[in-house]
Amino acid sequence: MIDHIGFPVSDYSRAKAFYTAALAPLGYTLVMEVQQHDNDAPAAGFGRDGKPDLWIGGEGGMNKPLHVAIAAANRASVDAFHRAALAAGGRDNGAPGLRPHYHANYYGAFVRDPDGHNIEAVCHAPA
Image (tube, rainbow, N blue to C red; front, side, top):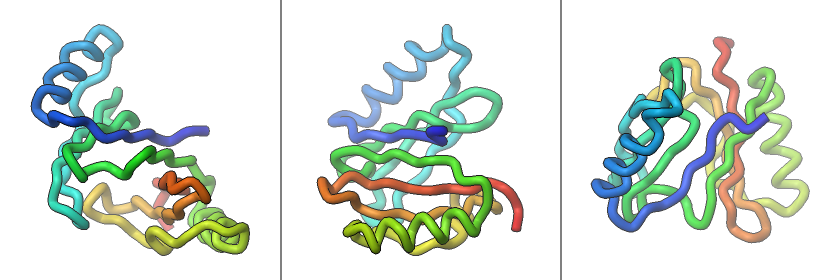
């Protein structure tokens, strides 16, 4: 199952306003905004029931060309994904570990696929 997806936008403020208005009839709201640690650009997460699953990022604030996160059943599965992806020719883009700037139990791992897409496995359950 897809956990969340993200993509870059050319004008962060304009895109945030657009998605705030366009997604409201679908029950989506702006759930979270974060600064990306690697380049300090903003990213906005939209979703329902407090869980952001559609992310937009300002210039340089979202992985290019695409970011897809796959939900993992547990942290061991995240670790196994990372090992398997690297063995299959992926490039490390973030070792398995906690990402507490998202939330306390956010455990993810990131790899670049052969085309440069950022593929993530994530588990939201506590250890």
